Image (cartoon, rainbow, N blue to C red; front, side):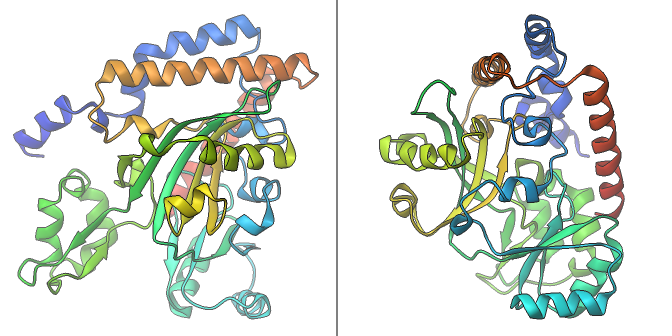
Amino acid sequence: MSVRKFFSRIINWELWNFNVIYAPISPVWLWYAIRSRAFWFFTPSNPTIDFGGFEGEGKKEMYDQLPPEFIPRTIYIKHDEAFNKVLHILKQSGFEYPFVVKPDVGMKGILFRVIENEQQLKKYHERIPVEYIVQEKVDYPVEVSVFYYRYPWEKKGVVSGFIHKELLQVEGDGKNTLRQLIAEHPRAKYRLEEMEHRHQHRYERILPRGEVFYLSYAGNHNRGAKFTNLHHHIDDRLVEVFDRLSHYNESFFYGRYDIKTTSIEDLKQGKNFMILEFNGAGAEPNHIYDCNMSLGRAYGVILKHWKVLYRISRYNNRQGVPYWSFRKGRAYLRAAKKHFRLLEQFD
């Protein structure tokens, strides 16, 4: 890494390691655990999701609790299934290329792929070591994240964060190779090892002028997506849409929805949108990124959300939703981390 890039990482807190960012405020998290007399104080926050949706929950349990008309068509594939049977299942389900594949239990865009043909699917199926999902590719042009919470004793919730996502991409100029475009990209240049792993076989390709090449299809900050704050678009109509989603099963009180839609206006009207993910207690308020926000202000946003999470969890516990025991939570988290380490080896 060049000296210039090194100092850019030092100055820009958004490029810091996750643990480095959160270390100074971790005592607040511990304080909530002490007040709750439960190390895993957040587990009652979303009562019908394992571990409150903090980590390690399956997508199937999440999709099963959301309105089916707002979920992309999805099927579940066992990784050790015979490939011919997989093709038969896809045909019976009416799937056509391209479509999306990802682990049922995954995070940070690990092993998320867009499959264009049978050869790619075969390679993915033979490689992935866990159960995965095949999902209809949603081609709505606008991808957003909406952070929403609702206190269980209230009917109306709060949309605290609303951002637009732009996938990590470069645009060809008819002159430079993909390698050169990546090296000059404001975000991709900090991810050269990842870019080389994924795209080295295309590095010397010169993209025609105007051609867009997606370096990652995952709309995560962890995968280099660009976020634009849409806070000024938050209004009662938007809140009403997510109130209805929250009341659908009366169990999703805190988390972030990742959504594709035809337009912001359509989303506010409750139409033409699909929910790609719901992330529960472990969801980061990602509207702190790409908004020229100081680290101090970002800490204020995070701490506000932690307080909300604590209050929701405490209330649900008093209504009879138990906290997970330390032993149960530790075992669950260890299994989840082991699972993710396995995924990272194959990503």
